[in-house]
View 1 (cartoon, rainbow, N blue to C red):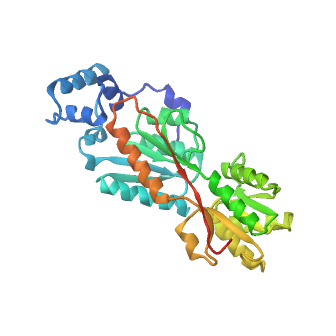
View 2: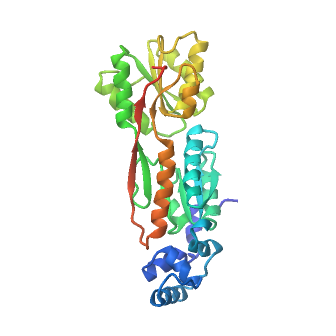
View 3: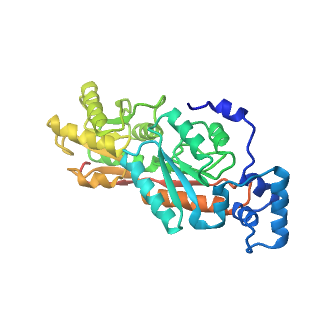
Length: 337
């Protein structure tokens, strides 16, 4: 049974290594070295840490003890869907970057469900040294679960006030995509958005702004499941409701690949009868026919940056400095547009 965030907050708060580090004015590694009686720190610092730990009633976990050596670090990577190649590519990059540091990474798949996300956070908060992830829960809930642990958010749409984050900015890339389609003579451009959101996605917002700037009606939008089948179904719905559409921008590459397949079934040649541009820049996009044009992200950089941010947070004394990094997506043209 998964307890509610309210119940979690009502429990007595456990003293963490972050509390000791904050009280002593040192990093987590220094706390762990002092508690493990290592020689790398001076006697005064060691005594200050021991006094702080004693005053707070701190009892180190096996994970806190592991902070002494970088090769025992364990990072929790939380992603919403392992079947989505975008998240798989980012996870692979993070694992590679962590491996070079001798760190372990445990990957958790929340199946894009809020209850799974909360359950995962409850489990890993006592099992890992830091957390990287895509989270849909409010930051106040995330803060209650992680309790001062280093956290790096990936893919957050807005700037975080509580955690370090790596945001994705595709505005210029989407504007470039729409400008390219207009230059190719398209005046009816539609979008296949992510339909499970309560509100239109930020990528829909970027598309609407770009279309409006070029005098294109942005109203031809249909929601799609984030699968190839979802992309195919959404394209049929879009073309039925808006038969004049000759170009489509999609929420991600998987939806776009489904749209390519459905266009063939409908007897529409790509890009002659229907141009298609995705978002993400997946390696898979180069393997379909025609190769997919996309507003592309550097997934390897995303994963590597996340590990770099964790390393910075683990080496700093509390309170943790919040950083906001932005990765820009760029239009990558290929055969589908």
